[in-house]
Image (tube, rainbow, N blue to C red; front, side, top):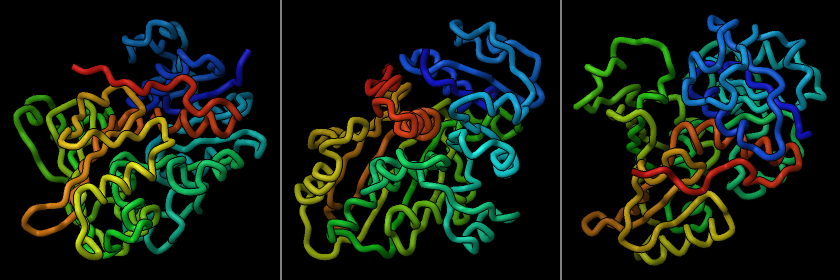
Length: 337
């Protein structure tokens, strides 16, 4: 029998993806699945793809029930995690997929989120220097944001290597509609999204302070774009070089940073990342070039927003916290086409 895990908010997209991954995990057992308005329904009614756990029933989000697990995943709307986490014993490990505990700066939280600042937990991106050990030693981990992962993986090694400036970083990041959750909002209807690209939260996106905090960037402009696809993120990050730099030097810096990482892959020269190649996986694909005209460094990142951007990342963190192999239950290969 493996470690017992519970998923609060399991009726949403990220929660459903967590259930899919946990159900196939060799060392985990589902202790409880909870929901709010969908409590009392079978998992198979909301997630018809999950045949192996279709007969599980969503329960009420009761801290007493969740406390029976060794680790609890919180896949809840912003603002809902702090109160629930506070009602769980300190002995229960928690991974929060939401944004309540990512930021260390209360002023940045106020500017971008508003509401009460709940305090920072250990930041859940194992590929950052030293972070893997911190996650493994933590009882509370804040999962990284989906756009943030794509940008941080591109930025952090280049600033650390001294070949990219920390100022004037520009990120353009397109994501699939599942990143907005399951709410039946008019602008997310198929007839509105298909055949269309649109910017959203331009200049005020909540992942900006998170990216700066984790990557070392000092000033950052971000343009998120809603793309007509269910899942995936394609992000292009432009950085000013600290001096004359070649594409080979940039690629070598990225390759050196991620040489031992199972889920971050610097693609062969000339091969561009594609969202379809990362679908269903916990992998991130990176490519870098130096722009022929401006001399700027351009790093393209692709990942699955429900995988490395949410549920897969959360399971990677949970594996570390539970002392399990980091890659257990996670897919390196995507499902394209």
